[in-house]
Length: 167
Image 1 (cartoon, rainbow, N blue to C red):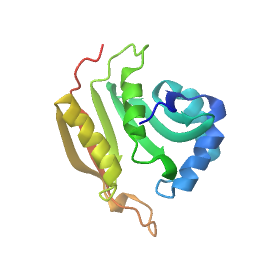
Image 2 (cartoon, rainbow, N blue to C red; image 1 turned 30 degrees about the vertical axis):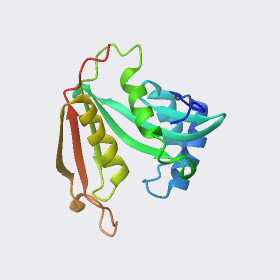
Image 3 (cartoon, rainbow, N blue to C red; image 1 turned 135 degrees about the horizontal axis):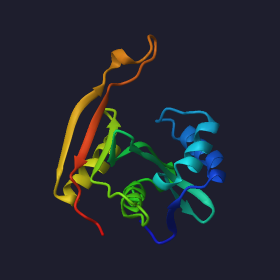
């Protein structure tokens, strides 16, 4: 990644641009614009954007699991086509994991990933390799859970951890 890309926490005013980024990606489930405004506002402590100047070129949404507060669940990762392959997703994930102000350390990262989503698979297995820890992969949301007529791949759960202390 080059120095011209900056990663930061989200603000509510990022929601519209994030919605546009997700829509243009064509690969992710598009939620309502209201959903992205709320994510960027209410979950700003666990969401990140990557910016090239004032343009948002990447977005990562995540949250701490209510039943496992030491686990960060990464929901969506998007990087615009022009800046892919430059380590932006990795930089957003590292920024989330290293954020100051995390009262409770993040010991595990989870994400569901479609079987054919190679960039996300590399992101999460790469994190496990860098941390020298496990990456367990199991089928989590099978196709039968999705509404009839919806063609959706099963989602595999990636669970990485325990992570090393990053303080």
